[in-house]
Image 1: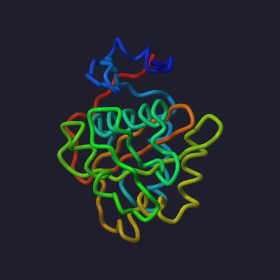
Image 2 (image 1 turned 90 degrees about the vertical axis):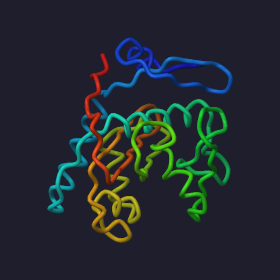
Image 3 (image 1 turned 120 degrees about the horizontal axis):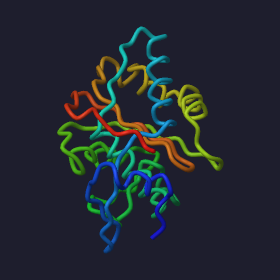
Image 4 (image 1 turned 45 degrees about the vertical axis):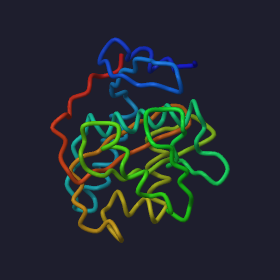
Length: 192
């Protein structure tokens, strides 16, 4: 199984069990420079909308990082399934998320399913053929009405009052999970 260099570096910092298919692997969750930058950019953008900063959630970040690994290794986002999809290769319920949002509940339930975070989570995803960057991801989300509504708590997300945010940026993807409940586990080690 191919594991990205950044993930290997993090293996020694914070141990969490994670499995793909039948192979058991230890995955470590840490926060890298791109993820710190994306958190900063999102909170600066929210400030321009007179919204409070959102605190980093260790649990929602674990969900985001788990999802990036699944997307990268198992390509659940193929055919009609978009980047909110999850493969059948892990300890979670598989989900083919389509543009009609038919399986939204299976996506929203991932934080509760995978971590100690006991509230629903709402994901925004960015994919590019190049290396994903914080600036490109936020720029793309700002141009997309649905994604922008999540970040700025407008439209159907009006008055959500996000209290937790999880972030993962690796390879071709940037994923952000938002939650309405605060997360007591906010500390993540920095990736070396």
